[in-house]
Length: 631
Image (cartoon, rainbow, N blue to C red; front, side, top):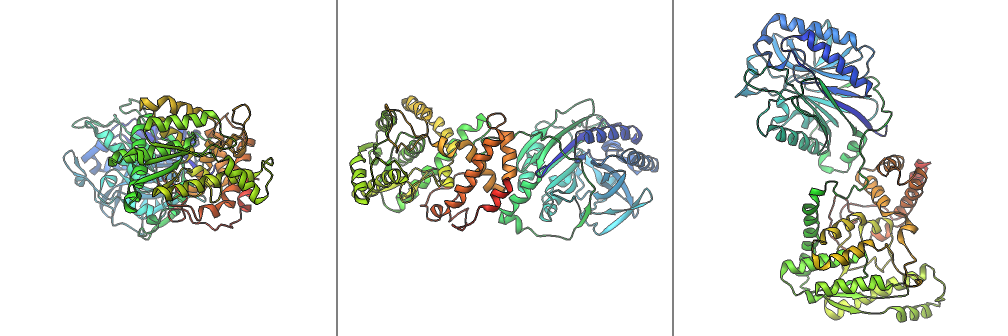
């Protein structure tokens, strides 16, 4: 389903040194995973014997019992196509290896030995085991079958999944084996572990799994031994974690007395295409690997994953201050560098009482405060025209007065009327020409005023408008420094909310946030806004969602529509989403020529449309194949 795979981490109730009883729990959990449409489920280290069997692993009886229990498991999962990764001890060339065996439909697909053996403090694995890190291109006999054996094994289906396996300490090593696995295409990693509990260790363990998934641009599924393990000297909590690209999707409650299983749906298609956008991934050294083809996997009937409708906005409120502080500092320091380098002391900005100019003004003001510069050198120009309402003008004026900046008013109606006369345009014909004349008049005034004042014109257009080309070429499209060019509309609202902590402007900002988004270029009626942008181009929250998935990893339109349907649930139906997605695609392609010559501006988030930074595209690229994919 659009590159999604359901994966699971299982923690079985363990009886130390009793493979028969452990096998029964393993079979139950594999079948439970299969019923839940899981593609792959991973179990803890040395699943069949228990990790704490210790020197008993050197006893023939336990190894023989383990092998027979493995045979029993295989017989009982012949009709199960969920892949299970189980921990076993393998005797090969008179050496004992701590291994993971990959099982599907009653067959052993491959065996991966552990590379790094801890031999300190409470762990002394070298008493029983030998490292398998040099084992490649070989096989071993197990249960009368020749099975691929080595650290060079990767497992791949016919679609988007390629997975690798490492065991416990491998993850904690300076150079984890998973680093090499992902360099060879693995986008899904599994770890069978026996990590004991110490104060604070669970938090570090979760961070380790999460950050490794981010570094590897992969999904990482981790399962650690549970409370059935021996408590002679240590206690095992049975920690299970599923992370994807630096975010933890699921983790269990530790110290459960019963077997448990957690699942999550990971987007492997997204991970594969994200890697194409990261040049450093392609520079990773490839090693020779063996690809093991897996059989058909369970398909997901319904996606069980939350899709964030606001991908540019932090989902956790506790992150708000930190994230907004970062945004403000990026904007402010970008401006400080530009003004200092150009030896310019004044900033000129058009202020409308709308979201974009409000944020730009606030960020300029913050930059001046940081540097101890005179805020009266911020020249805010309000330029009322045919559609300007008293509400927006009043908010613009009150905000400027509260911040102590220099406010100037230049009415553009007479200038626009003269322009209409000069180009022989009927002033009563409210066409695009009518609107664009006003937009260019405002930019002309700002540019000329900046010359007079020896100032820098600060652009206010945001990333959402740049994506849609919702600006007038050489009008609001142009400035000397585009301060908001890296921030989408949904995030602009979020940052303005942050500025409400300043009580002196909180009420003003509240009203600005409540004002409909409008260019105010058409004559109003009874001082009310009649031109609402989102009724013309569609909701910005949808366009920001489309933009993120389209640019971040090149998602197909069908997948974007599918995800939007989940993210916005009952708010927008499929027909509405499709309508605005078509418009987004058309405008994104046809408006590239505006982005090709956009002014400098700071990149703030992971996406920028600057032709000098993130996005390079032909101005005459055709949108047809993208629109066809939607049909």
